Length: 113
Length: 112
Image 1 (cartoon, one colour):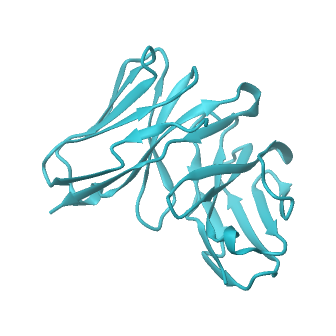
Image 2: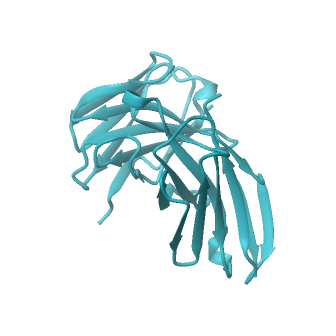
Image 3: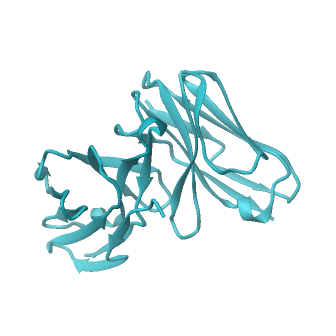
């Protein structure tokens, strides 16, 4: 069974479009995260939710909007996509606090043309 | 920058050799974690060492932590081609903000 899953795995789209990435974890964890990994493999946290409550909102353009319908799901919607949004987006979860072991999804490779 | 740094950025060794990579960080921590990322995959947790521990082993992995120097090292013994991956250290940051800061990563290539 996949612990943290993301869909889609690949996303190719045009500038200006709106897209969503979905994430689900079946680990029973309370906290979920979105990370962005750039072409140099630099991994940066974007958002974190604990039990559906937003607890981390890094300096991210407001075109990015996370939504957590329940504690097992964390989706990421991106409006008006730009070339610089091209990256790999990872969802992750942890049992509770952010400094504990985190479990990562396989990533969504977004390419904006 | 909050980000930790890893050294070396890239490392190429032969199968059977040992690989050592280092991580330096900037703030006080309660633990330090190492993750592996195979090409095109997500990160996988390898080992967590707490601030009151100096050394920890897991299979062929040995991690050391020196809180006075704010540094850690990951040693992989008897490396295999399957160990080829990027390795990242991660440290907690920010108290109530509950987040991990990942290092810049070391790309390890193990030649068969």
